[in-house]
Amino acid sequence: MYNIIKKYISDNTGFLIRLDDIAENMNWDMMQKVSDLFDKYQIKPVLGIIPNNQDPELFSYPKKNINFWEQVRIWKNKGWEIGMHGNNHVYDKSCPKNDYLGHGGNSEFCNHSYEFQLEKIKSGLNKFKDEKINIRTFFAPNHTFDRNTLLALNQCGINKVLDGYGLMPYEENKVNFIPQLFYKTFKLPFGIQSFQIHLNYLDKQEFYELKNFIEKNYKKFITFDQALSKVNNNLSYKIIRITTEKILKIKRIISN
Ligand SMILES: [Zn+2]
Image 1 (cartoon, protein in one colour):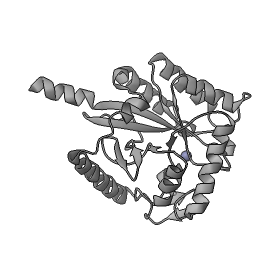
Image 2 (image 1 turned 90 degrees about the horizontal axis):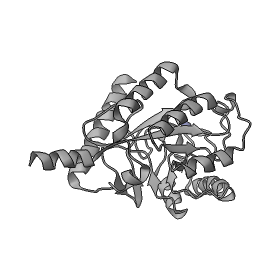
Image 3 (image 1 turned 90 degrees about the vertical axis):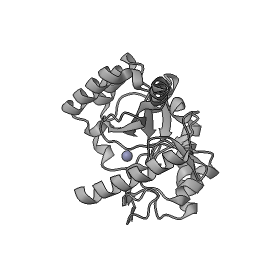
């Protein structure tokens, strides 16, 4: 019995890395450092590519003298998951916690009409299409999106979202959600756990912590496909999801 439980926990525990704000302008030096680390340990992250970046803050980072989309194809060929991280990453709305995950804050999508969001998503996807890169995954800038975003994504055939609460991937509104709970490498004894990394803000100490974590735990890293194979709408996982959502919302209220 003990062995069965041990196997169950082991089969359902795995780490994923999500890299945000991948665009022409970014911290390329840090990208090189983490790429070397990922290659050494065969880690395949999920990249959040901004297809039509117009975010003035991100323009302050350097461009590299390469064809950006050629680089995206190189990453894809390595088995890295290419996701769409918004369309232009410009926050022109704010949401008073009426977004899908109840985060609140600035948004590129939330509170825009369905038609407007559909156009935004089509515009982003067209860029990938022009570059002959097939994608299936989305995550919104600042984690803020709403039901209309999901409807528009569905309409465009995108049905994987790397965001949300819980410890197991699940399906809701015809979308597979892979939960994204942590902003730092942090280990729970159970669950599919994804860590969000903003390369642009990653300092030396944080890189060192990431490197250490990977060196100790690289065997527990999984691919995006492996995470998707764990999509599970089991009731007990739903209870865990609602519980983590409540805990994190309370934690945010306390820390704000
Ligand atoms: Zn972002």
